[in-house]
Image 1 (tube, rainbow, N blue to C red):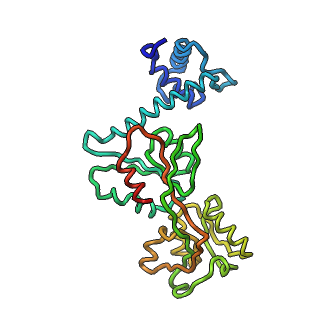
Image 2: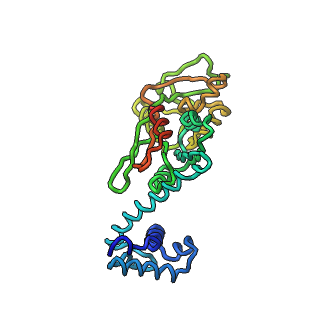
Length: 294
């Protein structure tokens, strides 16, 4: 068998079935009948001379050869996705940059990061947010160009990722100026029994804070725990409690004086990372953004 005999249309169908793990769902997604899809997969198996799937009840499970073929199909169609992403808008003289950011990341940080592009009329931005794992999956499928995160991720044989450190910022305890202007607290020593709103327990920042309080033998009075930084910002502004936040989240409130910094600890830091994959085509604007942030 030579390359001209490999039917890439059949390979695309195999790829979709392997991703779905189910013939019926794949057929629905591809808008063809299940019998037609099954026939195309059989033709591919006949061309390759080996079975790609075996049945486990109603599910299709990849054989060893199926896993090998899937690895190559991921590269082939992943590059196709990357190609389409790069071409989108070029006929109008535009370049599209697709940015994903974890839902717990400050929107102010994201805006500051993309700010150099906001005045560039030749750039179209596509911004998404969501859980880190979902964004990484879209990145690996070349549906995103970069993921902004506040935790590092490792690269391995299954996921070839580049995780670049962008920088850190101090975390502050802030409070309403009406109650806390001119006052300061040692963090965490002076927080015992104080009403406070904190990031949710799944956030790395929360783990840092809890460990710091435990070591100091301090127990603040928890009034709210919030995953979304935008909501935590609103609570900091309107509740009257103290709140633990990166200052970039409440930069406008600190500037106008509605909130004040009450305390800070050098042991509390939020770290920022840009996560990318190896790409055939270097995206110069993206590289400049990453280097500028670093």
